[in-house]
Length: 485
Image (cartoon, rainbow, N blue to C red; front, side, top):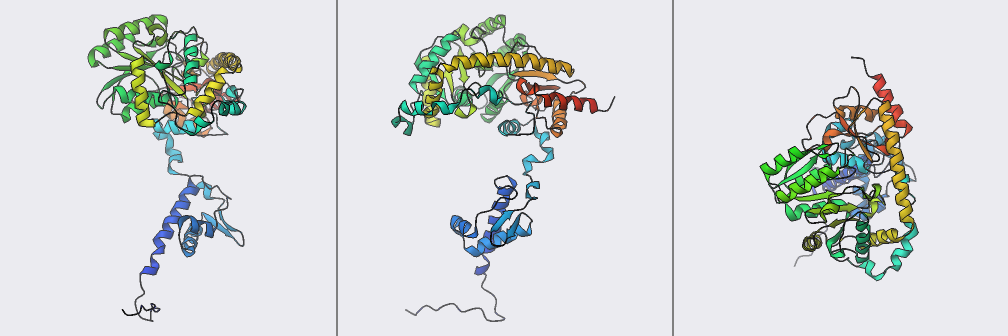
């Protein structure tokens, strides 16, 4: 077998072996990756980038490949070298914003995902008038750090394993008592704990609705629900929401025409209108459900903000035709992601099996945390303060909106949301685009409509944001600065 020869260097005039040029596309790809991270804010202007050695080891590239990538970034003005120190993000690199943050993003505000993204962002210098959550300071007295040790003492060994299919049993016991306070009689086997109320909706949709099926929804209504139903291929039939609840004539007509299986609704502190269902409509709705074999999915995410005596369909029906969804995101912390489904026992068992198949289990650690917080005597005082704060903020927000000349859909005694239309503004999407320049984040009405392309003068306003002095000042300045007709 002939001995292998060491390749000789290319002679002058001979074509160069193309193989040494192969790192160039790799270097370009690495440059694009780092450039994208800079654009998305993973690296901010002035941040030091990882060293050549660190990147070479991380990506298993030759050091020369990383050098070429940095040279590309320097040439594009994204990175600057500092002798003896390394490479840093250029000070003006932050001007290159990702595409979804360009000035034209408000044109996509009818997109459900757009508003969901905005709800998850933090804008420290903006007034989040369209926010879906109560002000953080309202929840700060339920400090989770107080309960960490008590959570681990409830069973450290179990915290390293998946939870059961129904969820943490002691929390379900606590929920039995909590539901009893609002007139819903249940037993632990009728409760399934979920990863927030949104997972609860997912499970109900998966269980009952096939692609092409029909479901009734509030209109305006809860926009993440609309996205879930669209994703499942479900046909949504809107039921107009009035100040005292669903439009019963439209509901009955849709029941006769479409024969839907489910109606998704919010009885109390309706999102986005802030309206409450009246007792008369509640009884009428349950009569229609019985007559047309309809299941009502009642979402009650703001239960802790409302009096225990408030009208709930699940309390009137006792979980016969009503599936009741709840959450602790608004009253404890959205970070815990603990929700639940209350329904008939057989259905609860099926939904628990579906949950195990799709998600394995919910977070037992978070469930233990919520249970400890519920059993803590501080919880009752927290609810009293929450309700007082909400009632005061609602009254103050109504005064502010009246002062701005806004039309309010309904005037509840307490609600996190108010549905309002500002004078001279017939398109709340255009209004949102204008107010964004004044650092006021609005939630335009068409996002909450089944027909997301429909023009709407309405906006959802968070009472906690409306009472901020900046809101009144900035909106008033905008309205005053408009050209006269």
